Length: 466
Image (cartoon, rainbow, N blue to C red):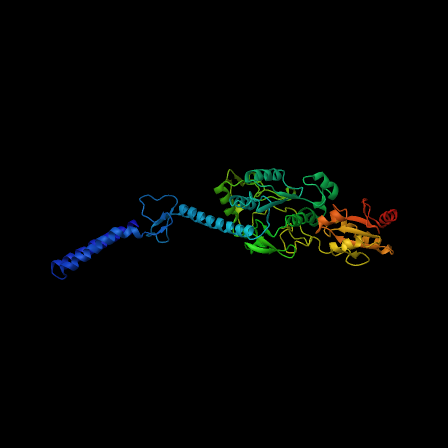
């Protein structure tokens, strides 16, 4: 603007000289001469008022050029403070994203009766937890929080959950593998095996992640699920919107309040509001899941988020689809492709086993709780297995139970899926885990088979003993 100003002054001086000459020799009137001079002088005085401004960042002339000031494409054009402009633009963006996320959460919580937030305590989930707290939805119980414990989480994760509960005044409901007490890793190992994830990763996902997740949503009577997925996390999620239907129970509203955030936006927000976040970020982990297959990025741990700012180069974390690079390391799907999802959020997630059990043969199906009660009150002896198709123990006994049904010519042999009606099977069919085999007597009594031996001979011996 400085060079432009001097040129303007020179042009005006030249113009005044020409006007003075014409006035002196009577070529223009006194009134016209005075008017033109007034306009020229006033326009120079007001010129600076029209210097372009962006927020609080003005294009201006400056005697000294700072390191953050840059010229426009034309060297004669004015300068502006680049870093100040970028900072203000990011602040504007963050404010918009925050308002957008809070509006989505308001719809999710206020328009539905049971909004539930499955919280994995990754960075985005911590932002959502903070927003729900700010909106009062955690303390008043309008939004519930559930957590899935796979028994393979990092040691820091559950203690961090307790910190969040205290800071934000809520209590999370924890769900884990079926038939195992919460927090009892020894019981899990005894029932499913400590190396289940090595032996069958898909079965591990069903038992430790998908089934507890589905059970948690049903237990909480969820009608809208809140989660922290974003488009920035990778091509599998590149087209998600803030609201969609989840493939659970025939359709469930799913709210993705930070769907349009980048990973940089997430950490900018955490830094701005001093949001509590997982301690693993300070150890080089951009994200976290199971300790067995999660690594720092880069692997040397040189990028960290400490005291609400980055140490080292943040690009390995913040680049597109990099948030989850350290997850599922060394794992592959059955078709040999690299594993990028645990199965919770993919289409068909409610089908935790790809088919039902005993779909043909002599095993008869009980389709409802009413039918189950009819079998108990029928006045006839029968055998009923209460099962879940995703359960590996139910799968392992499929052939033996089918053969047992073939041999029991004088007695009906039934199957009844119990994972979707747990309260009923616990109260009426002695079931606290799957599979549970019962002999139903003609007098209506239900006798539980306690042995783990489920071969044909053992089952026939139990029936005869009853």
